[in-house]
Image (cartoon, rainbow, N blue to C red; front, side, top):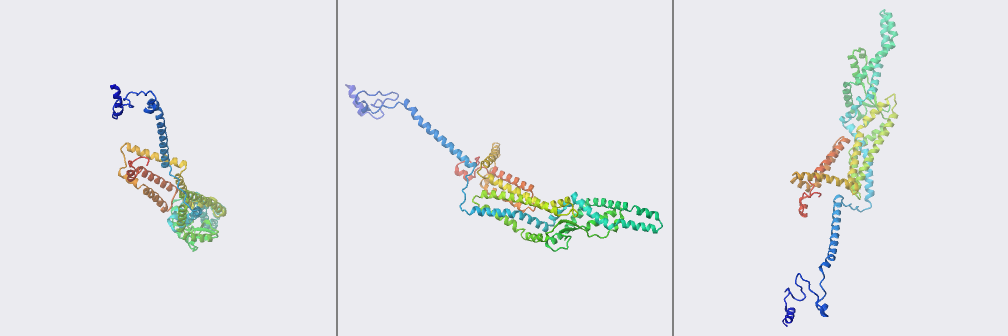
Length: 504
C-alpha cells in the first residue's frame, strides 16, 4: 500500500532531475520498457542504443570532414597557381587596336635599319675622332699595306726613271774617255734598273709597315676628314676628291715620307724625286651624286629617324590589345630588321667587289677596306639584334606559358632559399628590406630606365655592352627581390602576417 501510494506521487510530483523518477533512468542504468498496452503509447519510443547509433553518426561527420579537406586543398592549389602565374589580362576592346599596333611596329622595323645607316653616316662626317678610329685599322691590314706599297713604289720608280739615269751616266763616262766603263754600264742597264726598283720596293714596304707610317696615316686621315665633308656635300677641293667615279685620297705626303726614308738609308738618288700629288682610290662611287643627296637627307634626319622609330615602337606597344604581345612583336621585329640589314650589307659587299677593277684595287684590299669602313654599322646592328631578342625573351617570360611559369617559379625559389638561408644565420635586411618591399615596383622601373638610358646615350653600343647591361639589370632586379621579398609592412599588417613572410 505504501509502495503504491508513493509511486503515483513520485510519478506526479517528482522534481526534474531527481534520481529514480519515472521515464528517466538512473545514470549508468538501462530503463526496462514497460509491459502492457499502455507501454508504447504512454512511455514513447524506446531510447536508441548509443553503441548501435555511433557508426551511423560518425559516417556523415567523416564524409563532411573529407570534403572540407579536399576543398581546402583545392583552394591552396589555386592560390599557389595564381601566385606563380598571374591571371591572363583580358584583351582590351577595340578592333582598331590590332591593325594600328601592327602598322606602327612594322613602320618602326622598317625605319630601324635606315636609322642605323643615318646615324653611322652622320657620325662619320660630324665626328672626326670617330672617322679616324674607323679608318685607322686600314694601315695595319696586310692587303692594304701591299696595295699601298705597290702604288707608292710605282710613283717613286716612275719619277726616278733609272734607265734614263743609266744612259746619262754612260754618256758622261764616254765623254770622259772611259769607253769600257760606259759600255759596261750600258750592258748592265737592265740589271741596274731592276736592282734599284727592288731596293725601292723593299724600302717602301718597310716604310709602309713602320709605326711612323701608321702615325702619318692617322694624321693624313684626320686632315682629310674635312675633305670627306666636302666630297659628300659636293664642295670638293679637299684631301679626298672624286675622280673618274672613284673617291680618292691624296697620298703625296706618304710619298714624301718614303722619299725621306730612302735618302736616310743611303739611296741618295731618291732625292731627285719631285713633289708628288698622287692619289689612292678608296672606293668606287659611280652613283655618288645620288649618295650625296641621300646623305644630306640622312644628315638632316639623323636625330628625327631614331626618335621617330622609338616613338612608333612605343605607340604600337601602347595601343596593342595585349601590351605584352606588342612588346614581344616589337622585339622580334627589331631583331628581324637587323638581320635584313646584315644581309643587305653582305649583298652590297659582293656588288662593290664586282665593280672595283683589280687593276685599280686588288679584291682582297677592296674587301678589307669595305669591311673596315662598315664595321661600326655591323656592331650597331648586332647590338640592336641582341636587344630585340632580349626584349622578346623578357616579354615571353612574363607570360602565362608553362615554360615562363616554371622559370619564374624556379627563380623565386632560388631567391627565397637565399633569403631563408640568411634568416637562419641571423642576416636580415631590416628597415632597408621593409623600405624596399614598399617601393619594389618603383625600384624595378628605375632599374630598367637607368639601363635603357645608358644604352641610348652610349655613342657606340656593342654586343658586349648590351650583355653587360642585361647582366647588371638582372643583378639589380635580383637584389631588389632579395631585399624586398616580403610583403610591404602596411599590407602585412592588414593581412595579419609577418612582413617578411616568404613567398609573398
